[in-house]
Length: 308
Image (cartoon, rainbow, N blue to C red):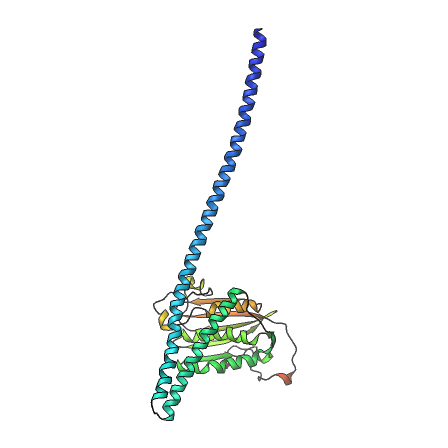
């Protein structure tokens, strides 16, 4: 009888031990599941904090943008209203009136640019920007851009240089001319605005599958930390001179979006107090053009050949 009782006791102990092991395994499984859920909740909380910070940063940027935009809009509008009022209420000679009309026209163009930038950034964020491709002679296009910005450069005693290297090949591309003009115009405008002395040079390099446009200046340059944000919308370089140079903080972000929409990329290389080089690419397939189609005389491919 004692042996039977011992056997039963051992069996009971084995059963209890198995139950304990099963409970312990279940506990470990539940504990692992709990730890996983806690980790998941921590990750969600971290993501929520990041999202909240981004939302707060976006609100701050947009508030700063709206405050700056209010100034940018009022400035040309005040000029238009002020000088048009002088024209209306005062007798003056034709020369002085012509100066006032030029100021009104310039302010109107400035205001139109601001409005177009606002419309463009809205379309870009909504994914509704339109591209209308067509054939374009790059040589003729660059000559026109040089003429367009020449006076702006001369007013600051800057040398605006069009590098004629590669233009003797008269490359022709299929792209949206208006958007390309907007991109290069933004870069040239910024280069001239932020350069006090020296020159602004622009031109192209023909690569295997694309044309690389570049704008190089001897201006104030951009710090490495600011180079990371200048292509983001509503961002402006933090500087005590921000108000001195003006601007709405949209030009480069619009340019980046348009370059990418045209199938290219945009980059910057800059050093403070020495200048900046902006480059962007446009897809290009080499096309044979007869000599009779070439509108620019051959100037050689040496970069020292400059069209001024």
